[in-house]
Structures are given as C-alpha cells and as structure tokens.
Length: 478
Image (cartoon, rainbow, N blue to C red; front, side, top):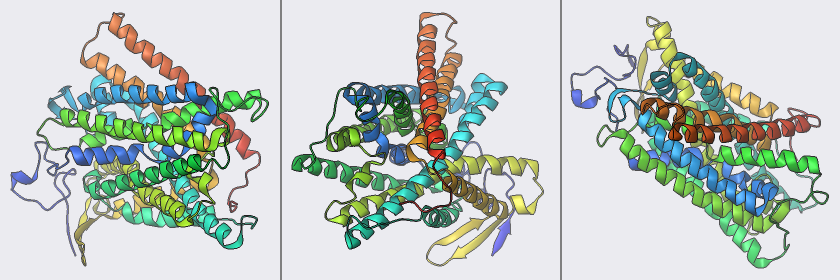
C-alpha cells in the first residue's frame, strides 16, 4: 500500500509529466461521450418518479394529467438546453469551466444567488437520496410480501421490515460511495439505465396484460378521482397539487446536469454534446412516462396505487413482478450515487481548502484489490461518505411517505433549479434588456412555474402532516 499527497487537489492520481492524461484545467482527462452522458441523465430522471405517474394522472384526470406531463417535459427540455451553455464562462464554448451548478450561478449571477442556489440544490440532493432510499425499501418489501402471499394465500398477514431493507441498502451504498467521483460512475450508470428500461417495460407489459384481460374494468374519467365517490372535495384539491409535485419530481435532474457535463470530452464542445444528451434523455423518459402513466391509469383507473408496480402484487407468474422490483433496486443503487456524488464532492473540496496540510483529508492511498486492480483510498472520504449514507437512511426510516416525499421534492426543485436560475443566467449571458418582450416572456414562464411549485409543495406538506397523525416510526410495514 502506497500513498501520495496530490499537488493539485483536483487531480487524485500519481504525478506525471504526460500532459495527455490531463485536461486544460489540470484535472484528469475527461472521457465522457454522448452515450455516457445520456446514460447518466436517464439514470437520474427515470427513477422512483415513474412509479407514481399512474397515481398522479388518476388524481388529475385525462385532460390535466396528460397535459401536465407534456408541459413539464417541454419546460425541462427548454431550460436544460439553456443550462448546458453555462458550463463555461463567459462564453458557452470557451472560458473557465464551472464544475458545478452553484459555480455556474456564481459566475453569471453573483454571490447572493450563489448561496441561495446552494440551499435549493444541496437540500434537494439530500432529499432525493432519502426518496430513493424509501423507494428501494418499498420495492424490497414488495418482493417479500409478494412471495409471502403466494405461499400462504392472499388472506395471510404478511409484513416486510422497512428498516431491514434500508439498512441493507445503506451498507451497499457505503461500499459504492467509495467510488471517488462522477467520472468513475459511467459503468454503474449504464447498468442502472438498463434496469430503468427493464422495469418500465415490464410495468407497461403488465398494464397491457391487465387491460387485455378486462378482469376489473376500472373506471377512468376526464377529471380523475371523483369528489363524493373516491375522495372529499378537500382531498381532491390537495391530491391534485401533490400530483403536480410528483410529475415535477419525475423530471428533476437539472441540479446534476453541470456535474454530468463535466465528465464530457473537450471536443466536440461540451455544450453541443450535452444538448444532444439532454434531448435524448428527455424524449426517452417522456415516452416511458407516457406509457407507464397512461397505461397504468387505464389498468387501475381511479384506484391507481401510489407505486405503479405495487398494483400487480398478485400477478402470475409472481417472479415477473419480483424481477421488476429487483430491477428498481439495482437502478436506484446507481441513481443514489448520481445524486450523492455532487454532495460528496462539495464537502471534500471544501475540506481540502480548509485543511490542506491534513493527511487525513488530503492523502490518497493506493490499494491493490484482487480482480479489480488498484483503487485510491482516502480517510476523510471514507468517513464522511459513510456518515452521509447513515444520515439519509435514518431519515428514510423516520419518514417513509412515498408520494408525499416525492411531491415535496419535486416542488422544492422544479421552480428554482429547473426554471428560475437557468432563465436568469440566460438573461444575464445574452444581456436581454429589462422589460423587453423576451424578458417579459421569460419572467412570465418563471412566475407561472413558481405558482405550480407552491401549490405542489402545499399539497405534499398537507399529505405528510396527515400521514404523521397515524404513522409510528421504526415499525414494520404490512
């Protein structure tokens, strides 16, 4: 075992004079391509959000539900395309690199908005880690309950320990978190993206099968769940707002877009490749969202479950549903890392600047692992990332409210990170005159999205408050 202290904190490799191994900023040569960037985006976007879309459409109905899916996809595609132009400053194709979303905001908008962006971005990254942990636990629980019911009958009292599932997921994440940076995640992201396609396709096929058999003939409507029949008028309002948050969360990946762009090769220009990757990612995910949301609503009607796959608990053969839930678990192992890596990076960069002489913080150890080659180990990285995983898993155990948490996260990230900051940076970069027609149009779009986010947040908070009245933490779920 050997160790070295990197002269440049950004480069955690053995010193060398071979310039072909480094980019113009002194960092390790970036090797990302359109394929890897698209995989990262699909991994980040097609996450637990897809599982709630049938429920969301059931709350909103055919007209509002499908319209919301289309509008959110269009807004996400537009603002994400703008965001790719802020990786470099002052020009999209030249100038210094902004390695994170926050650095881009600081370069174009200044210090106050930089700090405000940090609150929203890192708050949401932590929240998404919690949300993905909850989803994983529910998927593992669904496998356990499905096997129990098929073995002992539908009437059997089957329960699955949420806590145990989260602990196992946490242990795996502690190991995966030792992957040093985003650049080393490509293989995991490609695997995770493949898993997201797999369980989405299985869900679509199961929905088609259920529709074809016509066994339940579920009721759907233009306005969704009916007041006085399915819900009260107050529940209809709050659930509709929450559904908007769920759809917004399904498209949330803007907070990691710059981090993904930072993995790309310098040529062709990063923003050109990232625009294509964004288009691929949004179009692919929207197609799957439409299929899962629409077919899920047709299959289950106004009784659509919060978790799409949970509605197929008694489907035969049972292994198909179990396999789909297993794919969710594998996918979220990678998706968790996509959202956690920017948090890891922020703390580690800050620590290296704060304590540059600390061996515990700076020193890298080269450790040989049989069959896997050599990897770098850092004491601070190992301890800090382990504590982060423990924190997110503990919070997931305390607040395992699937749809409510996803809705709140969607509301929290959609307006500030997906809409407001990209539009403001676009205005600053292109020096769009105040009160001009274009300036007014962009601000009307921003204001409208702010209203949607506030409504979604209100609906999700109300749902969490209602759930807390009856929930008891650290109990197994049935």
